[in-house]
Structure formats: C-alpha cells, structure tokens
Length: 232
Ligand code: APR
Image (cartoon, rainbow, N blue to C red; front, side):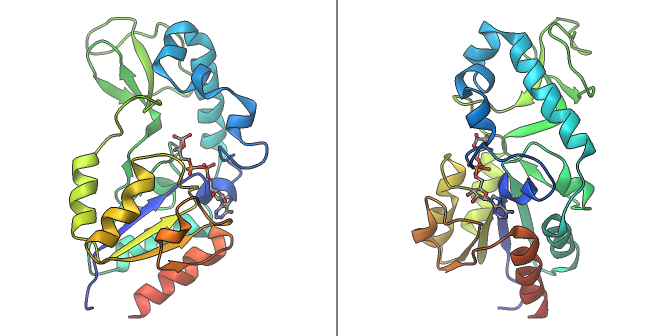
C-alpha cells in the first residue's frame, strides 16, 4: 500500500522509560492513590486540595521529564510518512510534543492545560495550580485541571473515530487496554480491515485482538517499527 493512513494510540507505558509512572504496573499510580479520590469529579468536589496537589505533583514531574526514543520515533513517523498519521494519546504529559510531534490528540486532557468548571474556558495551566484559581474568561474561582476524569467524556472522539474508520494501520503502544473507549479502538480498526499491532512490555487485556504483537520496551520496539514503516 503506497501511503497507508496510520492511527497510533499511546498510553502510560511509552513514558515509563522517561521516568513517569504508569497506573497499573507494580507500585503504579493507582497503587498509591485511590482513583475515586483523585480522578473523579466527585473526588474533586469532596476534596479539591487533594486533587490539585496530585496533579501539581504529576505536572512538576512531567515538566522535568525528557522524551525517550519511542516518542522521538513517532515524531519522525509523523514528519516523514507521506500518508496521514494521527497520534492519539491517553497520556496527559507533553513528552510527544517535547519530542517534536506536530500534533497530538490528548483524549484524556493535558497537565499543561487548565479548565474552568463554570464556563469551559481553557488556558495554559501554571506549573502549580491552587484551589479557587480564577478563570481568566469568567473570573469565577472554578479553575480545575484539564484532565478527563472517570465518568467524564474523553475529548476528540469524533475525530478519532473518523480516523479509525479510514485507518490502514492501527498501533497501540504502552497501554494495558483496561480503559474504554481507548481499549475498543483496535476493534474499530480491525472492523475496517486495518492492520493492528500492539507494542507493549506485557500483553495487554486486548492483546488477542491484535494481528501483530511486539513485546518489549517501547524505546526498542517503536523505533524498529517506525523504521519498517518508513522503509516501505
Ligand atoms: N514499554 C512499553 N510498554 C510498557 C513499558 C515500556 N517501557 N512499561 C510499561 N509498559 C506497559 C505495561 O505493560 C502496561 O500494559 O504500559 C502499560 C501501562 O498500562 P496502564 O498503567 O494501565 O496505563 P494506560 O493503559 O495508559 O491507562 C489508561 O487509565 O487511569 C486511566 O486515564 C488513565 O490514561 C490512563 C488510562
């Protein structure tokens, strides 16, 4: 196929070698914090300080992190592949952008973005947010991290589903396949006949749905995969 259109989904595993913790690996974020306390609207309403502190800590850590060879390889794919490439990430860090990816679809939001709980305005988040920060648009003290919490609707789903319906290749990288709708993308791609490939340290929950599985560390499997795509 001359210029296959490619949809890529990344998860926390692609940032693991950059020092950012994953969620469900041994000792991961969900072993340290209760999801209902730090990643739900109810948790934020109950104890906004705990939630703001949680994302301030992750934002500070992400600010210090550097992209690894997997992020760099995907940026190279996006700039050198003549066909369409959509990079969708579940991650809220900006390592894809730091690696030079020209556009990144953050379906779960982003640490470097702030959201107004009153008027939906978004603006660049300060490194450390505080409870009651005021919205620059409506001046109400309703700023919150621009993160899609459990129970909320992921961003950009129309564009993602449109790209999946036209995909020739779908690649999932560093994600455990535990959280929908992202975990269902492989089925949408397979349904239209796309070649599906998983690059993950351990087999994901949805590994059986992928035609091609390449176990290993993303910093090794992803550059090799990108080389194989660009060689065609
Ligand atoms: N290289 C490749 N894969 C890795 C590496 C690595 N170096 N290290 C870990 N992994 C894999 C693990 O095997 C695991 O399958 O990355 C995956 C990480 O899975 P999760 O911790 O569940 O992260 P993710 O799939 O991104 O979680 C999805 O859940 O909590 C929500 O919103 C949160 O976006 C997150 C979503």
